[in-house]
Length: 445
Image (cartoon, rainbow, N blue to C red):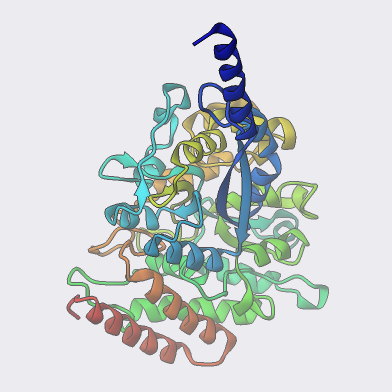
């Protein structure tokens, strides 16, 4: 072949490659791939979306498409997609409940990070909960326990002092004394919206403090036991006597809005809320918020819990390498620094890294930091109650059937709160629902 022919041939090849959007190495040129990210509509995740141009600037070959959903809807969509191998999503936001169950079904890809990521910096209890058989399947985006948040100005006015370890008896009495609906202030806000991750997270944790458990050691449902009656009756009574109207429709976000607008004196919920209720840009009562431990009921357990929202890769994703890159960015120490620079140290994702709780800037900006770490480290997913149980999980039961059972029982408890049925009927129905579903699953009752 003559030199001229070779030159012409080479030129033609280059033209064809250019027309196809390929460079000489066969790589994509100017054609970004899109990652579809499914996440919950919590403020920290919305902030992640807001800051994601930083990731795209560092990865010009990747675009991001966001699917942001309410918690119950997210769980339904994501569970259906991963169970059927639908492949709609490349990055999932899932909890520590799903990880061991889905990993056992080979529905998730294991995560691998470079040494600079700092795996050993992850809080041990959160890392363990996001793993299965020692392998990390979800990278913790934020972790949480539960805590009491309360109005220090209202407590002072009523001559009330929050104990270091409050009891439910104290909290209930304080809520009644502080209840002032004529002036738009309710004594207490607790989750009432039906859902295994909504009202059942709160009520299950509360049940633990009262000595209740979902199952005994032989997997027999326990809603017919007096501990559950004590817990649910206390919950319903205090919410009817000192809670906001329409509480059976309120979940985390609704109660956050109520507290931040100055309409709740006491709120028991996730520690992740602390940065929002103490942020003057978001909360009208930021200067008058105190933090304390989740209450106990004299049985050696509090109403604390352990949770983490994690970013994971479904086995059906064909873009696992790019999904891994996004997850590494969103859960890194550099991302924490990015949030601190843009939003302030008090607003960084909490509860995942030990180094954060040694950071003087964070400790100075976040008066809730010590209480958050205490709540996380004191939670034991292996011993959630006074009595032994055959399951792991504090505010959930780590079995596949729980997602369905928890939703159905949550609907019964929400109905009891609204007054549609009695507490006794709600517990009777919960017992029947749980027995039926576990029988179908082959568990003896």
